[in-house]
Amino acid sequence: MEPASRIARAIIFIRDATDAAAFTRCINHVRACGYRLLGVIAGDWATAQAEMDRTGAEVIVIDSRTDMPDDATPRLEVVAEMPKPGPPAAGGRRRTAPRRRITRVLPRAEEA
Image 1 (cartoon, rainbow, N blue to C red):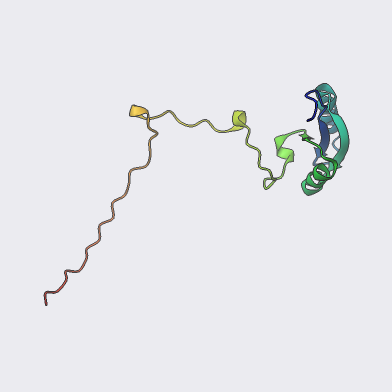
Image 2: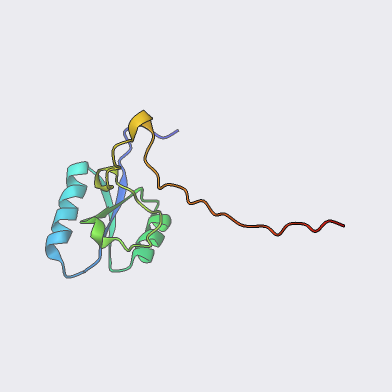
């Protein structure tokens, strides 16, 4: 069993290797959280994931959600950034679009 006070291991992922400001914000976050920095990956999310698997890192630090590719896995959903659902309709149910009725006329079976 691992001790509860184990220091998390982290990798920094930066989309643009020339973005010194993003790197500074990430490194400051790593220091503030007390993470053990295992590496910095620039530009390629798949490489960051592979490095995470290879090193056993628990955290990938990114400067902004926009630095992640749209098809990144695992997909992250940040509740604070999600659109708010509309208010429920009367009776506690959400409003849904009315159902369309489709009427088909079936041919009458001919009598034998």
